Amino acid sequence: MKSLKKQLFRLSLVTGLPVLAISKVAATEPCDDFGECKALIEINSSDGDIGFHFLMDGDDLNMARIFDAEGRKVFEDQAKGPLKEQKLTETFAESAEPLCWDDEEAEEDELIVYLEEFLERWPAGYYLFEGHSDGGEKSFGETMLSYDLPAAPTEVDFDGAVISWEAGDDLGECASYELLELLVDDETLPAHPEDVPVDSWEIVLEPDVEDDDPTKALKYSIRVAGDISPKEVSVPAEYLASLPEDTPVKIEVGAIGGEDNATFTEEDGFCVNEEEGCED
Image 1: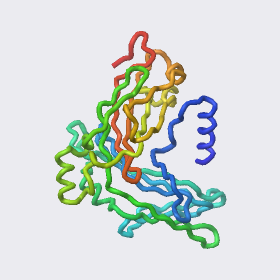
Image 2 (image 1 turned 180 degrees about the vertical axis):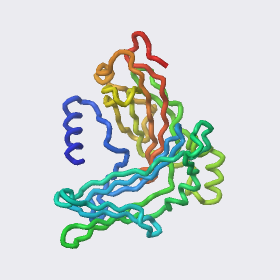
Image 3 (image 1 turned 90 degrees about the vertical axis):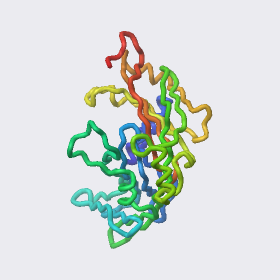
Image 4 (image 1 turned 45 degrees about the vertical axis):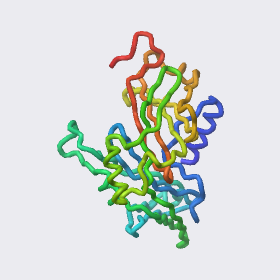
């Protein structure tokens, strides 16, 4: 993972363009014995799904474990064979992201985990990270999982050169403004999402093509300060020129706040380098 990060960093230096982050989890401070650790909640307000994400970065580990705020073991990873000889360092994973709303178009057996149920499953508080190395040496760290959930961005738009958006006041498909008021009133949530400060915004432009299309890998991503005004970023002309004519693209804007929790909004239907027009 670290070597891949270095490659991406070198690529950004050569091209002068930001490169899509390997994951949206971004721990910025040492975590006791670990170089990094982080646990967070990520919501896609447009698709209406919700997931638990985590990152840990230790030295020469054979085993890694995570315990939730109630002391329950929620993750264990053990190196074997050649991996045990070479050791683990950084581990990033995310849970499945079930729907958090009653989607009429969902399959009958589609798992639905409403916001209240998700919060019951993943209690707020300190999550303990534990690593084991040769000789019985152990590493420990802890990080806070917060229920401070930033509101979903709204009014996401792209005029062919500039991506713009506005701050929202709910969690999209996952929870309406009124439901969130009730969750605050009964102290399930510590604060209404509209009142959770946004530390940064993450903006991603991605070709909306089939997965086997090589253009799919040509993503543009950048993070900007939460207090940016107006809320917009210019997409480099060099990046846009790298895309073929009539490339359909989608935009994703995420609000990052409350111990790095993230709420994303997606919009599609945009066309880059339009000549004959993008297909619907």
